[in-house]
Each structure stands twice: as structure tokens, then as C-alpha cells.
Length: 234
Image (cartoon, rainbow, N blue to C red; front, top):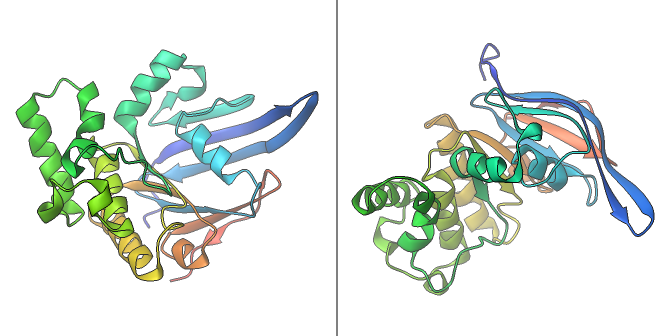
């Protein structure tokens, strides 16, 4: 990884708590770090350590209590809900553990969904979708429904949907957590290619050391505190 690349994500003094009745439960405490453009970062930690919360804050899904998050120079913590929704549509590609595909839509229709928010014509949307599905190796499954696809193939559709808008960041929450070992390796290989060949910046939450080894950098969270991180072993 080239250290002179500029930061694409800048996090400063980030804190987040949740309320449980009258209790305030701290989830993240005074988190500060940068993610460089083209980085592949793995966030690790035990259940309840705050890693998914941190991912959701970076992706603009959740709001911080205090602190700053800049993505591509934009301070997202000051955006309104409407502005955040627009920003997410064009800057964030989501990859979830359970795919989040709509079962009554084909692969093409699922991948096309994020493009419906753009000004692209129907023909242009179709072209973008076909390119994305070719990238993930599903050119021959475009008109299949999720129920006709294996778990690994469904996750490939989800990745195609995540990259079809050419987002600033790919955020992945346990992307291999519901897959067998062979399918998990294929998905990690695909994410590696998106990072290495397409230069995609990827932030991945995982509890699996094998998945984390694919990243350039691993950051560990424990009880909402960021521990010292080391480059991932290769």
C-alpha cells in the first residue's frame, strides 16, 4: 500500500452511546484514525465491541453523539437526513452478511435498484448493471431470481449492486459470515480484485481471521476503544 495516498476517511474524537431505558450505554469512545484511498481495512473485535456501529457511522447510516467524520472531504456528521440519504446513494456501496436481495426481483433488477436514484436512462442503467454482473462473474445468471442462486452467487449479486454506482467506499459487514469456506474464499478473492484492480476503498467488519488476512490493515476494537493496529500479515 502506498503511504502517500491521501486519506479518504478522516475520523476524529468519535463517540457513540445508546440508551436502554434510563441507562446510557457507551459503544464507541473517542475514536480517531484515517483510512487512505485504495485501502482495504478490516475491523475486528468481539461481539458488542462497536465494530458494526463504527461501520454504520462511516457509512452515514447512524449518527454520532460527538466527533467528526469526513469522507472525501465532506463532513457527513453535519448533513441532514435528506442530505445523508442522497450522499449515501452516490458514495457508499453496502455488502451485508445476509445479502439483502429482494426475492421477487431478478439479479439484474436487484443490481439496478441503486441506479433508480440517478438520472441515467433505462438503457444506460442496463449497461451499468451488465458490466457489474460481468465483473462478479454472473453474466450467465442475470435473469435468475435469488432463490435460484447459491449463497455465494447471491453475495456476488449483492456485491454487483454495491459497486454499480462506482461508490467512494465499499462497506462490508461480515460479508462471508453466512457462506461455506469455498464460497467465502471466492467472495474474498472478488473483494481483493475490486481493491487491487479497481482501486476500491473497502472497510470490512469481520470476526474471521482468514477474512481479515485479506486486508492491508487490521484495526481491533474492544469495548468501544480502538487498539493499536498492525498491517495485516501476508
